[in-house]
Length: 180
Image (tube, rainbow, N blue to C red):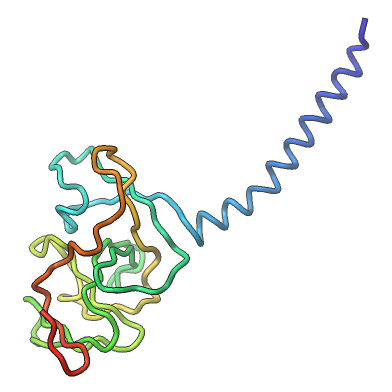
C-alpha cells in the first residue's frame, strides 16, 4: 500500500508548480488587456446603426478593442475620453485627421474648423443623438484609448467593423482640394 504522505507531498508539489506558473502569467495577461487588446461593451445610441441598432436596452454590442496602434484614419471607430469629462468614455467615428478642414454642424458656430496636428475630428453615426467634435472641437489623439476592430456579440452581427460606412457626405478640405 502506498504511503499517503507521499501522495500528499506529490499533490502539494504539483499544486505549487501550477500556482507559480499561473502567477507568472498574470502580469503578462494584465499587460495585454491594458495595452494591446481587450473586450468592451458599447453603451448608448450615438453610433446607431453601426452599434446597438436594436431598441432593446438589455442587449448591448460586445466589441474587440485594439489598443496598440496609434495610427488613426478616416472611418475608424475609436474609444476616447471625453474632453469635457475625462471619466467618461465615448465611442465615435474619426471623420477628419490632422490638417483637414472640417465643415461643421450645429451647435458649432464656425462653419469650417481646421484639425490641428495630433488631433482628429470625431462624430457619432447618429448625428442627432451624438455629443462630438461639433460640440467640443477637434480631439487630441492622446485622449483615444482604443480602436474598435470587430463586433463579437450578438453573434448575428459578429464581424469586422465597416470602416467605409462613415458619413459619406462629410465635407473636409485636405490640402488644396475639397473632398466630398
